[in-house]
Amino acid sequence: MDKREQLRTDRCTAAAVTEQLDALEGMTVGELAEKYREVFGVPTRTRNKSYLRKKVKWRIQELAEGGLSPRALAKIEELASLAPVRWRTPLPNDELAVAVAMTPRLDPNRDPRLPPPGTELVRIHNGVEHRVTVLDDGFEYNGERHQTLSKLAKLIAGTPWNGYMFFGLQHRLRPAPSEEACG
Image (cartoon, rainbow, N blue to C red; front, side, top):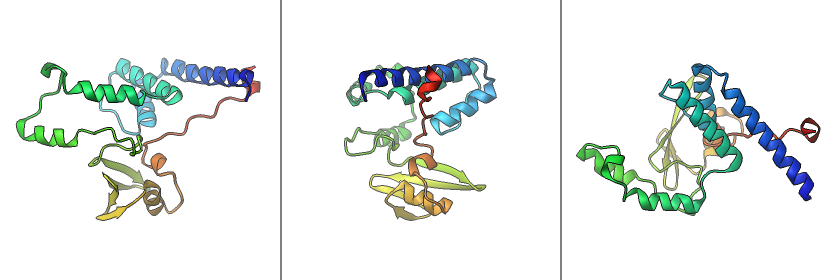
C-alpha cells in the first residue's frame, strides 16, 4: 500500500470514528447504555448520561486507535501500589487478601484480551445463561476444563464462533468505508 492509499484509509477510518462519536450526542440514556454494552461487552450500572457518553467515546477511540502501550500498562501497575491510600477503594480486612491475590499481573505470554484468572464470563445464548471461569491455563465450564474459548463457544452455540467475540471480549470493528464514500 503506497502512502496515498494509507493516508486515504486513515482519513476514512478517522471519519468513521468521528461519525460514531457525533452520533452519541443525540442518544438517550437507554441508547447509551446499550452502546456501552456493545463496546465493553458488559452492562453498565450507571444511568448518568454524561458519564456514559464519555466512557463510550473513550472506548470507541481505544478500539479504533489501540489502547495503552504495554510500557504504559506496566508503569501503571508499578505505580498503583504507591498510590495514596485515599485514592484506593477501601476493602474490609478479610477481602483485602483476596483482592491482593486477584490483582492481575502483566504476563507477556498471556493474551491481553483475557481478563484475570478467576473472572467469570457470562453469556446468555438462546435464553440460557452460560458461566465460564477464566483459569491460568484455560477455562472451566460446567465442571470441565477447556483449552480455548472458541471450543466453548462452539459447544454452547453448536456452530463455530470466535470465542472472544462470543463472550464479548473482542468486537468486530466496522469495515472502513470504501474509497468512493470518502471521496
